[in-house]
Length: 74
Image (cartoon, rainbow, N blue to C red; front, side, top):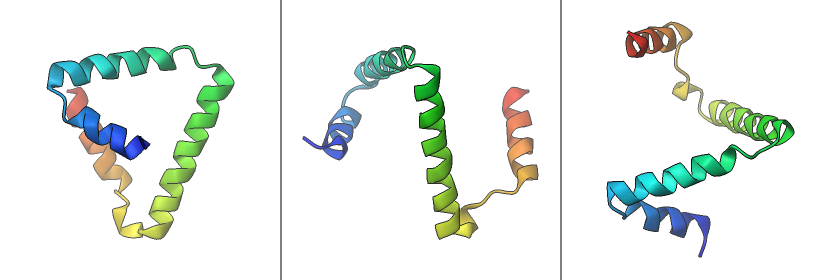
């Protein structure tokens, strides 16, 4: 089974079961070393940078991001 297959199957579960799996996955990340976490964030930053290079129209102006963040925190 591929990762895509697994994701597809998990998304078919009822919300309670998906939440349980999500909790287990989050707990498994708590054991990562600082170096592993930094490596994962670097990979994510590089992925996002590539995505923006491929399609600059996906960029969101900083003012919009900040406005949305403030609205969510209010």
